Length: 179
Ligand code: MN
Ligand code: MN
Image (cartoon, rainbow, N blue to C red; front, side):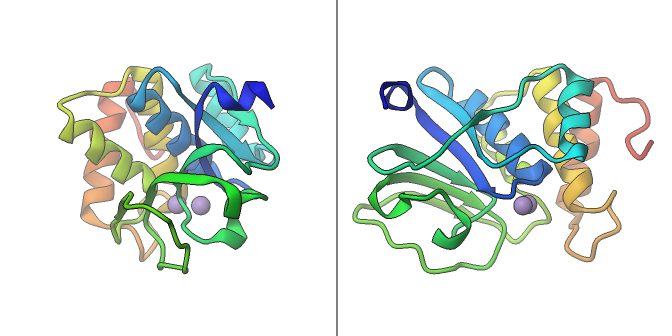
């Protein structure tokens, strides 16, 4: 498929949640030209609310990714990823889950940090590159953290997640994060 070939696809897991959609959008935006966010399933109502709120279109719905170049966010296990992943070229993985056994044929950037949300890690990469997400992207990433952390109430939520969400909220112009 020619459309697929134009991009490196940044994709979250199947049955995508808000982190999988928003971290894919946020990381594709940081990577820039030649990178696009994709998704492996329908957008759930919570995520659709977030996309509508910030006026951002959903990532492209993707199918079999054999032969494609891909970056995985919010997962690192083949069973949770795209059909055809065994024949895809994984360039990078950004995740916050247990390590689940994917193998690659070449060295890759594999950044797994035990924080509460992949969006927190995406923001680390913005900082590492001296960049700031635009207001819409900051809103998406903030929403992902609120979603994965159950508004900071989840035991998996770290101080870094909360500080990141509050920082992103300010960029996004969100006055009351929990509201
Ligand atoms: Mn997820
Ligand atoms: Mn997540």
